[in-house]
Image 1: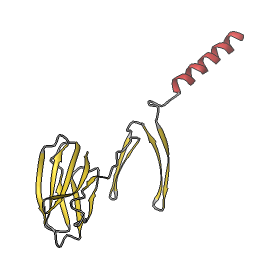
Image 2 (image 1 turned 135 degrees about the horizontal axis):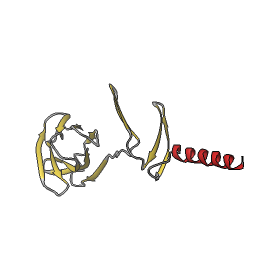
Image 3 (image 1 turned 90 degrees about the vertical axis):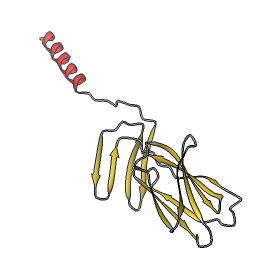
Image 4 (image 1 turned 90 degrees about the horizontal axis):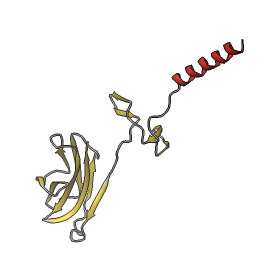
Length: 161
């Protein structure tokens, strides 16, 4: 009888070991983000396990998503121009929207550079809102320089997914 109890305990322990699941990575950090729009729990360092698409957007669960909006420079030589420039979405996968406000008196252009400094595209900005195609570019980091009358106004760092 004692051997049967030991054998049953051994089987129970083996079954428990076979059904145990654990993390495949050790997350670096995590937390909760609350806003009037809702709540999100996040873990940094977890691997991807599910992507959900809907009419309002895409959510990739279980992966650290890069999000970066940065102005690399704001030149002093174009201080008198000083437009309000916005660039979004960043990171992007298909296109960027560049908004330049207060551009009645200035002639703006944008210059798109690769991370190695190679010039990819340059165009004049003719309206307050300009769409810049990024769909044909490879994933990586890019820089978008805004100039006014050949003076550098701002340079944005762009992440292309």
